[in-house]
Image (cartoon, rainbow, N blue to C red):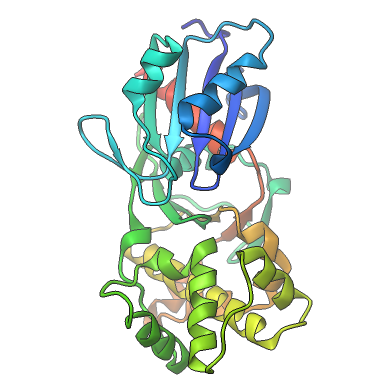
Length: 328
């Protein structure tokens, strides 16, 4: 692949697939140039290949032979992936054969986002906590969407290393009497309540259902956006209480992750649900719960925590990762 030859970069989540036609820019500040970009709803298609085919058909004759796919899930050594939140399986061999690609590679979605975090401009983030200046060291990228993803960007002498994780599948840890009651309620129907079972878009639905059950009520909402809307405009006290628990749990969980992964370079929050609750998040207990780690509070106060609002971050990250792979 030449330095200027376009290639495909896709970010595959449980709800949407974001695809870009990209190429190397030669600019170290923004190494990826996005030539075309579209977003597709997963539920509208029988599989990933059909989405990719539709995108390629929009490119007006541009020939594409390589690509990178960032996908939510756990990558195995044989190139396959264990997915929890996708509506259909993903096979990299199927993509390669049906599209006739010479080279297509698979990467964890939040590993890709971590590769893009270094290229986010200051005007694309909202600082929630910590100092304004830049920090150095391992950086955590985490976010709730259809599931919850997390990766750690680790600087190294030659090039950075990214640790992909399945932090969303770890057991949820609670810290208040209300959270204990909600966890107990959720444990009535399952033996394992994961982080993403509560801290994701569907997780907010689960939290709200548990909250209603505690009060002998039934949830009347069909999608997470209805809960966040009712909470934000204060039209439903129960919805507001549920979203406040969500934000507090998210802060506490991310504080735990920062300590577990030895984060010193700061934290980027990404994920589909957070921009929708930006103002609520700022006023919530998120920061206080993030810092509430006993003697480690002083360490966490040194970490910048930023909300990323760049909609193409996964595509840019997949492209950046692919370019690094090709150069290695």
